[in-house]
Length: 429
Ligand SMILES: NC(=O)C1=CN([C@@H]2O[C@H](COP(=O)(O)OP(=O)(O)OC[C@H]3O[C@@H](n4cnc5c(N)ncnc54)[C@H](O)[C@@H]3O)[C@@H](O)[C@H]2O)C=CC1
Ligand SMILES: O=C(O)CCC(=O)C(=O)O
Image 1 (tube, rainbow, N blue to C red):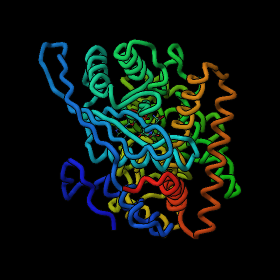
Image 2: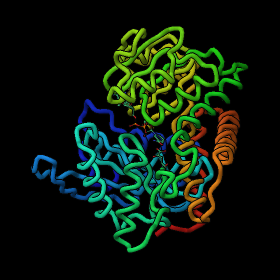
Image 3: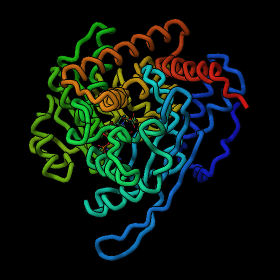
């Protein structure tokens, strides 16, 4: 049993499923399976550093607001801290801490030399002007200046942020240190050292993992009925690539609601529609409207939650009809729901595997930048695919070897590698 982390974490409300407690439960289960010693488990259950900064921002109307910005650095046992920056109203320190821990296991599972971190600000970016977002991002970066860096902690996009915010972070960091430092962030625009293939990378990784899992069941993507919650960087790219591979994307949603078309949506047309409708798919011609709740329980072959945590819970899991779920989002299925799905024989492709394509191409971007040598898209995609397919087969093998579900298999691989490094480095006090 790990102790309660010594962190300034807000108390979780009883009605709220705490993502950090869930992350610790998965770690504990992996620790038990690996027979990890108490000391290692204790160290790995605590983030190494938690930073919260005040971000004063003058809004366009003259009002001054002070926002809280977090960066949680869970572990740098395997290398520099790595993980995205989230702008979303539901961001809390507990959530960021959980996501930072997931990054540690994800990087270890994929065999890339990084630790884990995550950052976030509790804002709805849709409610701020571009100028306000730029001021917020620049001040947040300035406040974190001593905590980030190309060999210390390398942020990247997550929900609510994109290449645009990464360019602002890179510029602010560079101005503060007095010279250009492209390697301080990944997911940058190509103009400042970004990598070809990064924008589509997380969605491409999801497509690859679903394709491999279907192939193991003697199926192919062609004709599969797929439902996707979230149509942003990850959900949008996954939809596009799965559509190109011949799958039928029968329903898609964003925060404002979804659309359903049982014979398969025209994804290129839907992307164009969302681009001119404030990123919403609501009102797309011909398709029927559907709520986010109903979308999750549609009959389909593959369900891809690509938005928020805790979407499939004890409340709705028994209505979920998909036989395969690929966690494109981080933590979309609760622990209890996961157990019920496992008992029902549903294939759950866990987040730290299914959505790792993004951080893999972030790593490839960082490597290209550090070596001042840039690759074509084909090479980036090929390198990423190799790492994803290798990790998939390792997880399947581990699952068979230990007779555990795919999540526990992925966790035992990730946690096991970090614990081994911890032991080899001799970090015990
Ligand atoms: N961007 C990346 O490279 C990576 C992202 N992820 C994870 O993927 C998930 C999505 O991230 P992105 O696509 O980058 O974010 P995004 O901000 O580009 O898109 C998020 C999408 O989810 C929708 N959404 C928000 N709240 C919703 C709700 N309550 N119900 C339904 N849809 C809702 C939004 O409308 C939008 O379509 C997150 O869990 C993130 O941590 C994981 C790995 C890498
Ligand atoms: O690309 C990265 O460095 C991190 C992506 C991320 O935040 C994630 O995988 O959840």
